[in-house]
Amino acid sequence: HRPNYVDELEQSFGAAMKRAGLECAVFESRTKWLQGGFQIEHGELSAWLRALPKPVGILAFDSVRGHQITEVCRSESIRVPEEVSVLAGDHDAFFSEVSVPQLSTLDISPQRVGHRAAQILDRLLHGERCPEESERIPPGGITTRQSTDILAIRDTALADAIRFIHDHANEA
Image (tube, rainbow, N blue to C red; front, top):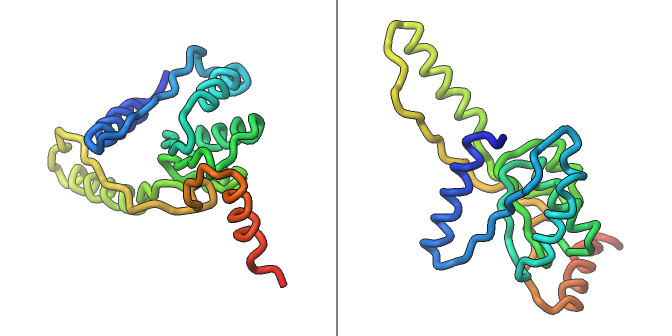
């Protein structure tokens, strides 16, 4: 069972893509998420990634899913970010850093969220009513890392050359 915010993120992102005149494909797993569920759905995710037109950008709902996408891409020799750029919808330091390449993430502003929650709690403790509507706090931006940090280039030889230069530019 997916959390509600995942459905909201999917709907909002899909609507924004449609307004921009772009297509939006959604990965729908046919398997239930179980402990160890990644192994069960690896084949489904792999087939979906291989079928996408390249180059493509993917918004993963969180860093765990973003990490899974980069792992499947690596196992299928799909190049990240040259063929598939991956942006995670949250920032989990561990999964962002251990992903190869490291994941770009939305800055979901946890400090601002916590500060706003503390303000509301303070008002509740002083006898005010709980707000009836959910409050949305916009992300603070994108933390760019290697999973999105390259030009989308169809020419694989040129992409390889740019990646080599990028990886070795500081060597003497």
